[in-house]
Image (tube, rainbow, N blue to C red; front, side, top):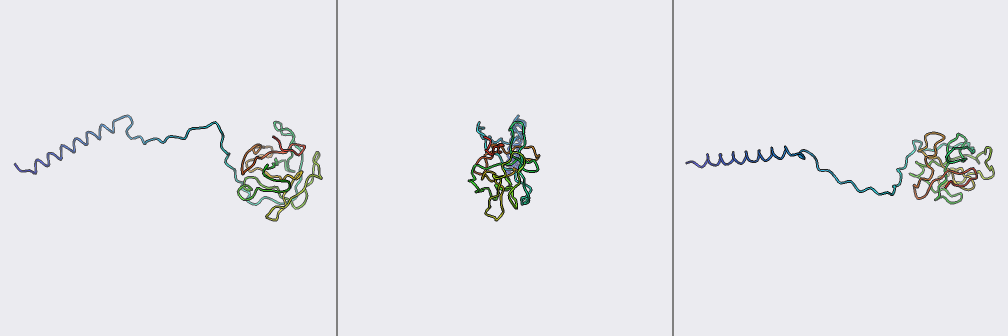
Length: 181
């Protein structure tokens, strides 16, 4: 007997066996599924919120006025002349703004050409400006530099209250000019 037919018969038998094994594997309930990755366990602690960058890369500079507005849940707070909530940053020192670059893309410094005007309930003597390192002047109240939060879309929003971003906490100012805890 010639060895070639025996080799061909052996190869055909091996091919059939492997095809049968592949068919059995593809008919299994888990066949065709990609292996899943294990998600990291959740913790009860909340992470730092993702900052919301502003679409206004250059904050407007102009005349600014401050007013008192009643915002229900947070009470009477200081707002700018257009009714937008203003915030203070706990990392800032008196008349010393520290929010620049990426921070200032999320927390827009309120810039003015001169001291801001004050509406009813605002201590006009406590409304001032303080120099920034870029040469602009930022509005301050009782020495606290003021910012707007890019995440506030409506003039009545207070979405930045209590956020911990960029190395400090952000708070609205009560009508007395103190950060709301």
